[in-house]
Length: 140
Ligand code: TYD
Image 1 (cartoon, rainbow, N blue to C red):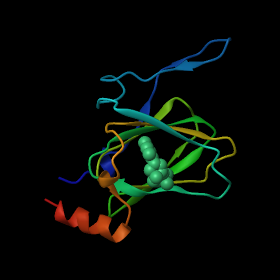
Image 2 (image 1 turned 90 degrees about the horizontal axis):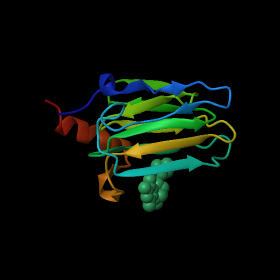
Image 3 (image 1 turned 180 degrees about the vertical axis):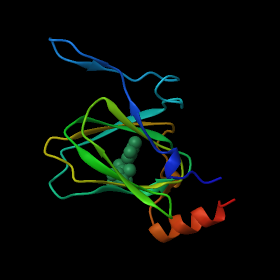
Image 4 (image 1 turned 30 degrees about the vertical axis):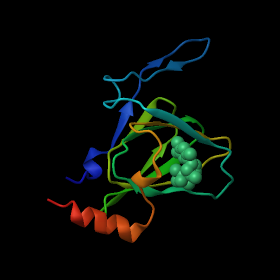
């Protein structure tokens, strides 16, 4: 069955405030409800560039702006919503089968992505029309 925008959530991560500097963390089963198979990060994005522009059939993920800020546009084929990530204690959970684009990266921004799957090019839907058809096939 298809996920929708209501399955996309901003998770408030713990924040331990300290005069020596703050600390946040993510624990499986508590803040993230999938087994973490892979972590990757996106950095040194030139001004004006966008990333992603695809959906995944299996991969769920949690995105954190470890540094700087950027927007994540999420699209379920009917509605779109933009989530602005600008604090390192917010995680954006994106469920399967949703189109996403990352935009408006600030200078020196660093995006951490925790993924439920190993890398598999076959899990990507990179064509928007194909994404809409995939959604239609999976409609209940
Ligand atoms: P891609 O996910 O297409 O990045 P974006 O959607 O932001 O443009 O990945 C870019 C390239 O990196 C692509 O050739 C696949 C490769 N890649 C890996 O080899 N392993 C990974 O874990 C990821 C995320 C990408």
